[in-house]
Length: 173
Image 1 (cartoon, rainbow, N blue to C red):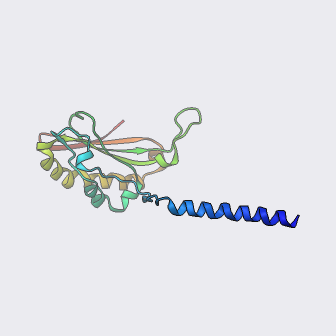
Image 2: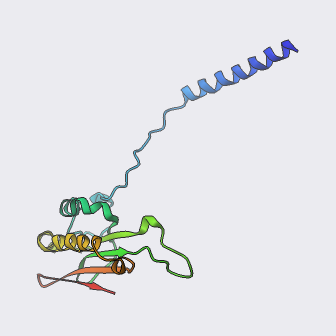
Image 3: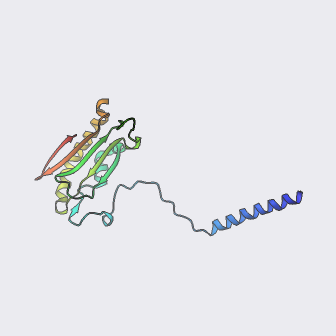
């Protein structure tokens, strides 16, 4: 009986050594940091050549500062023409939608959408958005954070439209 234990133990030790050798021969897998990339390189942007985004993530981060922690989604839209809309923001409330179904807690918060514009108008649009729209967005988010419960339990959407060089903004249902 004593001999059987030694032989069984030797088999276990031999298997462990074989596994260690196999692990040493396998190339290491690269571990990528768990970071959400909010920017997209120009080469992978999926926009037609005549379209461009008027803002960058850096522009938005610089303006919003600590309020950026409340943003759950930052999207650079790739669709066709959005008309005169150049920037959109939304508040997703934690309210239930239908018969007890609710919103996932990770989705509650602010989302920002940057709409593409004609590439020839990008610089002018960027200047207007940085000077006017981003400070207004910061103010909207700041007021929303301090808003009463009634406001926070309702979804809200806010759009900035640029028409003939004039920026107009307002909340829509």
